[in-house]
Image (cartoon, rainbow, N blue to C red; front, side, top):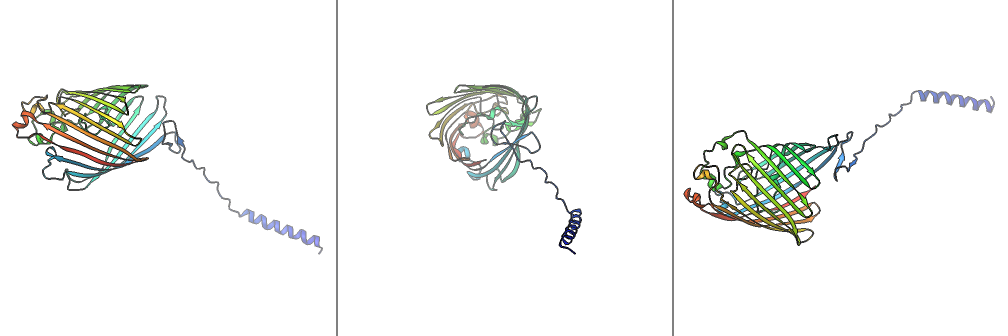
Length: 374
């Protein structure tokens, strides 16, 4: 056998073996394409596309730690503590997508609140649906905060009923720096018979609208901005109580801060305002530094006693209340802030208070807050 024959034979043998191995080889499948999260900048910062869709989603929220306090005659709570601590976690989901009618928006806000047992009202450890609504072409439906919730930045005032979130059907027109809207709301009138615990404890009057009804309210507002001047005029009518309230609020820059003025008038207790017949309030939010804002403010409310305590009417009687306080807002670092609010309250119950054995009262209330936003 020659060298040439040996080499040719070896090459043929290797070819046969290689062909057999190729027939038995396992071919790996191509990996599926992965769609990475894309930034969506069409609606502002923080949005991203939900993979596989053209819907943009934003996730935000905060963790809040509050220490609340109240001292004095008006804060007498029957022997319970005059302070309590509350912790809250809130998360908000906002989804947006384009349609032929404009952006389609959906918002869901959940809150988890906790405070220990032994404080006024008992323990609190619950998760609640704070907000949930659909918005398109100016129409908004769901559980949402109404225009009355847009109050002062200071914490001294009471310029709404305290309940400003309802199941609502609302339409709001917006054009540049102007807006106007109207809403139908499923209100909660049973919570509105008196803002003051001493009179409430003296006995709840037998009022038909407190026991239920159609629970319907009508709310409307106009507002906007002109240069450094902001304005808002709103009104609400409680169908069950057959009472309504209107509020005007303006703000304008002066020196290192912004002045805010408000005036409220109410025909009687309603789901929109239960503090009194009329009130005026003012604040001055002073931008002391880039991180510190100091906001002093004052409010006077006249005829704070509902008529039904005296003669069964549905309007207001006598008495008055003064509120004066200061709020300190400090930005510690980005997304971490603190707030301290202290308010002096003086309440005069007039002849009605004397008739039911309730003395005039005053005291101090407020809170300290630490909040981490994200």
